[in-house]
Amino acid sequence: MTSGVVRLALRRAIGEVRYVGVVRPRRASGLVAEVYRQLERDFGMLAPPVALHSVAPPVLAAAWLMLRESLVADGTVSRSDKEVVAASVSEGNACPYCVEVHGMALGALGSPGDAAAIEHGDYAGIAEEDTRALALWARGDGSLPAGVPAEAAAELTAVAVVFHYLNRMVNIFLGPSPLPPAVPDSARPKVRAVLGHFLKPGPAPRAGAALDLLPRSFVDGPSWALPGTAVGEAFARAAAAVAGAAEGSVSPGVRDVVVRELKAWDGRPPGLSRSWVDAAVAEVAEADRPAARFALLTVKAAYQIDEPTVADVLSGQTDGRGLVELAAWASLTAATELGGRLHRPAGDERG
Image (cartoon, rainbow, N blue to C red; front, side, top):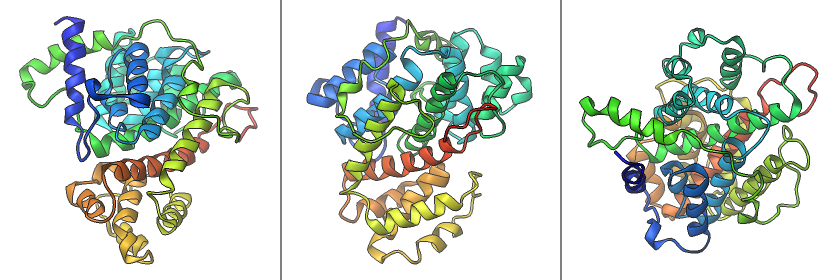
């Protein structure tokens, strides 16, 4: 299977996105076309977790900017350590799609044993002590290994934040695996091996080269970011773009209930029952309850969102673009809060 065939298959995989129509590469123009071009150039493929945002171009650019400047671009942290964080956050968020993708990337970088341990939630099976500590930190179960410099801590936190974001979007809009459902079980190991080789990162592109996709926000970046860095600027611009898109898609009542519930949440899965959702939305205006229910599930249990939940949102005034904007706002609100809670190295007093 040649890289060209794999690339074509991955382009076609964007047709697996649920609930919304994705802009096809041949029909892309303007901002969407530029993001697609950068995505294939710098990430190596038209990744469906990013392309699913294409009905809302500024949100698409925000998702790519955060992913590029945290995981993909050149920095002080190795790509292997970044992939450990990506896979571990994804495992903690019950996002098998992202665990599989970033486990394959980690395996292609020479750590298949660590990838397998993370995939099965067996963190004791990670042999290297610092790698194990890093993986547990990414899940919120410990501190960063001793001696991690502030710039490296910021880069690792950025990866954790963007995957708290992407895991939620993927659990809503994509299936449990990056492999097409048509691939038979007997062929999946071979296809995974080929895809894993294709996912092996090449030379890291220059940091900050994608910032012009979005305008300057003129506000400070997140508290965990170092001032004047490409990572901080990327997340500031992305947050402004998502917030701007949400102005027309998220009502004040929905915002209030989501922020309140998030602040009181300990970050643990709420369980299979959805009674907590019904109790939380009871005070929201009736017209806003479908959106509030969808947003709260996005924050705490995106893997529980199903067709009826989405249909209730779409039956109102919300279209596919509004659905993506609502999901992006809720996902980034959760990711920002959870990223801010991650423990820092000893002596790091930031945020």
